[in-house]
Length: 444
Ligand code: PA5
Image 1 (cartoon, helix red, strand yellow):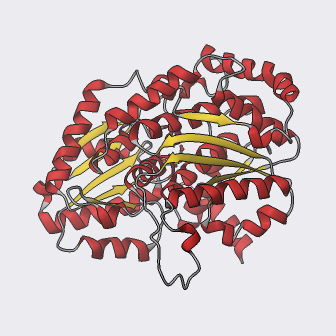
Image 2 (image 1 turned 135 degrees about the vertical axis):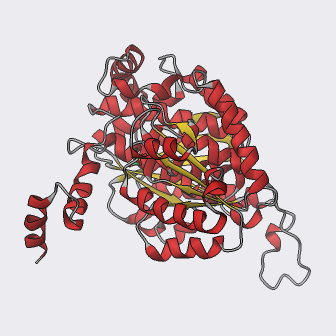
């Protein structure tokens, strides 16, 4: 197994008998998922996606990626939330958070349309100057404001710089199979399109064209990524007390009921920072409803031990920590001996930095558990394609089981609409006239 649940540092907080007591609820959640008769059951396409995906489209994704790699210096990936986080998280985890500074035979990949910042978009435009640019616009609904605004600006920029005909072959739209403004535009303009399947929600869509096209453009092996996800599906689809994915879901719910309302996802590899963001959306949007849910938060250690360490060690005891322990870093680096030893670091001479990092992790786990913070450890072999695909599926499946155990529909996101309605009203979008006056009065 590429991902394993290690409960050693949880044992003093959660007894085996508590796992046994909650197990019938794990079985019930599993039955809802496998029986496809639980809330949100029309959004379960992700469950079998690692084996049951559109192979023809998969081949087209690889062809499009090869073209983009051959004719593009900067790929702008336009999307937000589930149409953005997975691709970025996977690229940074597998190719490094400094990918854009190190990429050689593949394009720089910049993510746009995930904010409404003119400053950010202007910086992106200036980076594009004189470069060969392609766009991958991703929106399931095709109507989300942030990517739609960015796409309007960038499409115009591209058409102005290379002409409308050439722009056509440089725009790739990932959207609904048949509906929506983006699909209509793409059909009218003749852009190549890829599909966000109807039964896969945004936050579960990284293993569809939403994630796969940008990931392939970074030169990463999407076959291996899918193989890893398929292996995790195989490993975790049977309900037993030894299912590590289900143990993680169970542990989260046990801790939640003991008052640990915050989960702190911690990893000692900076390349995991965007995976933390992906996890926050996956779990936050899936579980945070009906006034329930663990609040997903995250840190990169040892970096954040110098900012958040005090709180975790000694602040309000509201949290547990889930440590993602990457067993093998992408590369190794040894610390050399310095004859002068002015910095006093010769006790680390000839030592592998990953060993130093591991000792930091072990020391921190012991300190935090001594400080009353339960620690779950998820052991992950590496951040290579196979293992990352495996981890993605592990988190998705655990999220579904955990959400069902919590008694919520893990596949909807009704709360996300509230801000949009207010924003549209304040911007004067037709149809929102009544709310506009009401909201403006509240702001005065
Ligand atoms: O998970 C979700 O459903 C959301 O985060 C969406 O992905 C996000 O709002 C973007 O939506 P769309 O792809 O329709 O532009």
